Length: 212
Image (cartoon, rainbow, N blue to C red; front, side, top):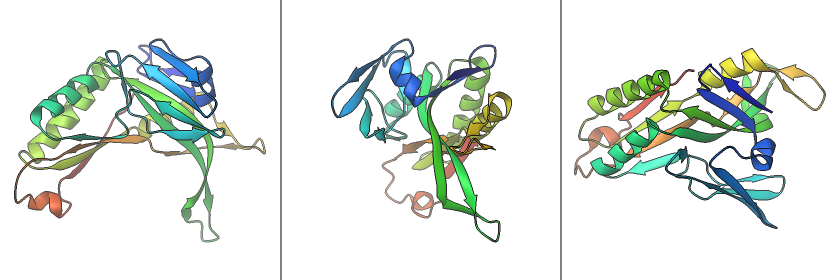
């Protein structure tokens, strides 16, 4: 099941099964005995999906940069920024059912994966583009000339989608509000500064949210 969010399809949420069976425009899937190879057009799509296992077969996105992207110079940063602001961005996310202990505290390590989705957002959409530009400008101005890490978080967008469109159904046909795992991606910039103390002590970590 694919559900689009917003009049301009800012976000698309597609179950992995459907993505493999009917890949979107610009993608093709090669089914092998031990894995699926997913091919995409890097001129149109920015894929940030790590290899993962699904139904006893490995899923490999051939042109993926991975969920954590490393950059070592201004050219790499500029190239990545341009891609984020002009392409459709693809990520893998999991909807989980969290279990609670007797004290009603969340037990994160007990979260059960209900379904996996390929989620895409349109980086060229004016509203999405504005949020990413603002977040990146804030990050750069905060840690200019230093190494840094920035997490771009889509949790709020996924929670909004789940609320407005559907509940995830467990094996027992019990509707639950899912907790989202891996609902973010990370940019890591490594400068050549000799004494990069803020980075060493963990002060160069930034995070901003994207909503749709």
